Image 1 (tube, one colour):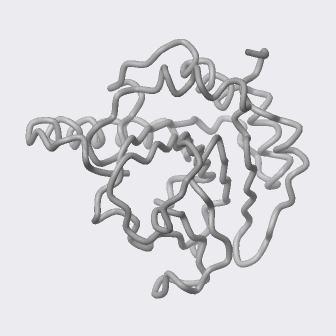
Image 2 (spheres, helix red, strand yellow):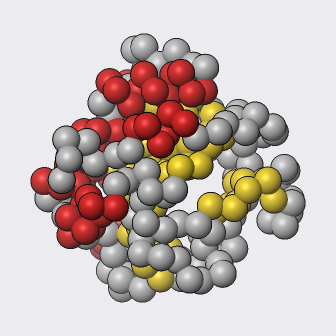
Length: 214
């Protein structure tokens, strides 16, 4: 595995669409030769929902990927790409492993999130559903700007504008996604991690089977 498991040149050369909100998609952002080891070290997430990394156990190849996306090189590249200043802005990372039938409803992210990065860690995606759609509005999953196949290290990044609507047609089954956010302040990180920890506790308490969500 090379020094960085992510393809920074591919990210830097990816075009940015500016309408109706700034976004870019990078196929194979996670390098092909790194995927097998990272997926082998991916945390066991067999219940619906987002799980903050401090609540999960994972191996060294996955940890190297997290270090890379939270590192200064990628942060500087994001600043250049989207024209933002991320100095002093903390990051927060969650992981998902499965998708439930209720997932995918159209939404925008919390206003405390400045930038959202989604990295999909599945094999080639054959299902017609479960493909994230960037949308022109809050009411119609068919009013599509772009569709993102959740496969093989594909990365989506977008600026969290008030009109950054997204969602997907429901899919039930394994669907691995890493989410990285730059957020407004550390208070957001603490609140979100506490909220996710409480949510994860009750999900595990209910003991839902591994046939669930992201």
